[in-house]
Image (cartoon, rainbow, N blue to C red):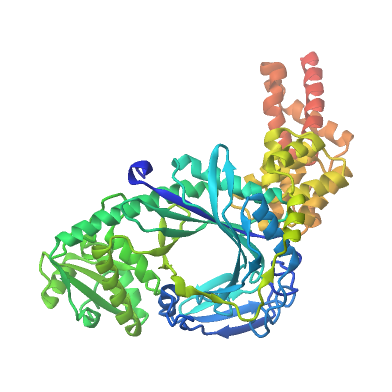
Length: 635
């Protein structure tokens, strides 16, 4: 991706941080917020769009309703109840969640409201059984500092998390209810203009403020970043959801700024063209015409009883493939839109012949539909009942880009740092008052008490870790920022193992195994604690720890004891170790003759491979050096 100057484009960025809170129960019931993939309850719903109190439909909800999805919910009584199933009214607001939201507001210097009004935010994608998410505005204003950059706070809300999506299969979407209702805070910053490299620091600083409270959940999925991006010329704010890693932020902002500017250039091209579309396009069924087409995509669609349609555009040749920036094209925008309806994608005339569609297919198509060389067309496969809605949305999207430039969308971040269409941006009709929960009064005394007991800052917490456990600043930062801080303190308090070694294993060894494609969610806290207990009891050596973790994270074992058996880890005694090393030294006397004491390097590698976790590296090194010196005397 070629670099662009975000200053020249006048790029503004705003962050929305969603952080789960470390409470003992959910926001509006007594269920414990525990993750579980075992479900004993199953039910289904069909969510429909309805008008707000203003008598209007929310555009995002209206658009989502066109999918006509059936939602299947899976639940476990340990982590959800009738409240999550929408069969019982919400209980009283969790007091711990309320206090944590006030603490975070105070740390961020925000103005806390005297009265909190729970609201309903319309959501009909199935992630809430009710068709809405409960949220409440706690405070506004405030600021924090990321190094020397002062970042304003727009709002802080307390709300319930959504259900966990389990999968999408055609017209059916599946959710698990264990996450639904977990308390979280949503913190929205004021828009700011900075260099690309500073965005990560700004998000990291806010995340560290939250972690320093020691009242937020850690681990995968416990914190999510959304980012709002706009450019000066466009004047439209685009919300990008699902930025899971801080490393993505810079790429997402750069790509989205480029996409928005590219759409403005595409808009200008569209206005220059005297074009119109075929109003009978949703009737242009070319299934029979393409029945012998060699495209596997076309043939698979026909086998699935889908129809092949063409949408034609007069005098629009070249526009779908026009790419003002790399990867930014009108054809790509339209392809993202149709995928929303469960349609695999589209072919556009500027990229054909390709994908098995041959030149003869195109000639026949143009002759049958009287499409000239100056015209453009789209080919898509869809069920008959969907085609009218899809074609209508394609036309509306192109018309909007022509007249307005940048569609006001909510988009989703991809792992590569690009963004893709998710849904239209919600409007004011999305929010309305919650009728089942009375207003919540926040007293002046309560706020004063909160402000007297503000937790230590991130910097103070790092210094405390360094002093208490005698670890270096870098390791203190790594362990505090990780999800293992509480586990680290637990292990160090219960055992006599060196804190530096414990922190290094939790921060580096597990991360390295993850980079090799292993699943850290399989490694439970009890596995980690048990491994360190075995180390303290001298039943295993340090080198065994990573081998045990690797075996569990690869799914081969569930417990530490099982892993010990599977990898055959059993510490050797001194006599056996001496015998093994003497034997290896004898077999490699030529290496020792040539390299003298430097032979310790290659021989150490041979021995470590053979013993694999059965003896400590330091012990092996000492015994090996002793035997090499002994051998040198006899040569």
